[in-house]
Structure formats: C-alpha cells, structure tokens
Figure 1 (cartoon, one colour):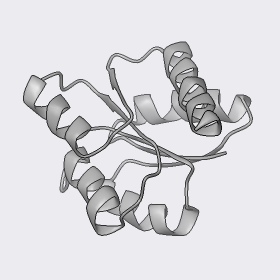
Figure 2 (tube, helix red, strand yellow):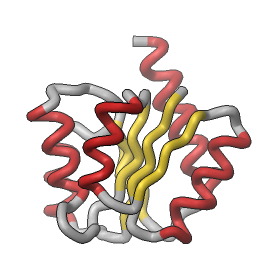
Figure 3 (cartoon, rainbow, N blue to C red):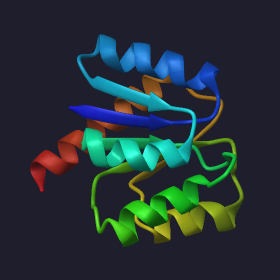
Figure 4 (cartoon, rainbow, N blue to C red):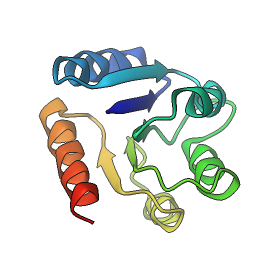
Length: 123
C-alpha cells in the first residue's frame, strides 16, 4: 500500500515514515501541500495523511483539490493540532475518513490505518 504523508513538521514526517515503512508500506513524504498535489498525481497513493495548518495552501485546500478537482475517493486521514469544530466539520464535509489530533501516537495512527484498510476491503 502506498501512503502519501503531508506535514510541514519534519518531527512528524520522519517518525510516521519510519513506522509505516517498518510495517511494509511504501511511504512518500513532503512538507508542502503544493508538492503534495504533484506527488498525488505521480505516486497514486492508496492513502493520504495530511496536516491542516500549513504554509501556502492549507490541508483543507489540499483535500478540496483531491475530492473536488481530482474527483478522488482515496482515503484521507487528517493529522492536525487544529481542533476547531468548524475546521473538523469542514474536513469531514469534504469527505475525509478520519481526523487524528496531535500530538501523535504512532500506534494509534497504525490502528486507524488498519481499520480503514479493513473497511475498504470489506465494502
């Protein structure tokens, strides 16, 4: 399974990359959502993990691009310290599959990915 992880914090990207690769995932990371859009097209990930608060374009704008402009239903997990109800509601309205609050717990991320994977294999 190919995973694209987009977060402007290297202290978030590197541990996620190491953990997911140890579990057998192919992981592509970028600290920039604009690069994330380009990588989405070239990598064709099976899952995207994206932060909300990033420079230049936000995670919400990235999600909007993937869901609306690309018309993609690829599973998306938001990983963010932004816990504002309106932001979370907007993300779910755009069709994300999960919202994980920072600080991260790598085991929690892995369990949620496993749950999503089981869900999509079942349906």
